[in-house]
Image 1 (cartoon, helix red, strand yellow):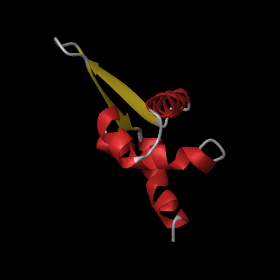
Image 2 (cartoon, rainbow, N blue to C red):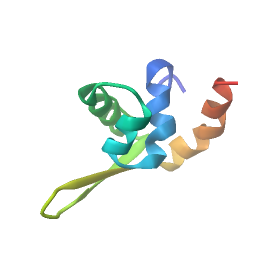
Image 3 (cartoon, rainbow, N blue to C red):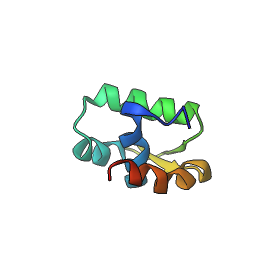
Image 4 (spheres, rainbow, N blue to C red):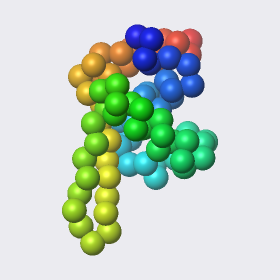
Length: 79
């Protein structure tokens, strides 16, 4: 649980929205800060990244089973 603490919790909680552009509208943060936090979540295996090969590259993030199991706990932190 120590890996899912502090300022990184909102990114973990909102990754279910998948696209970085959508996340940036929800979480008011600099794009580079958001990307760094998403990459950290990848490193700790809280999310996975899917890259689509198309004319315009597209990336989506998904929560892992571990992260999904933490969502109820994270949701209660704000209460």
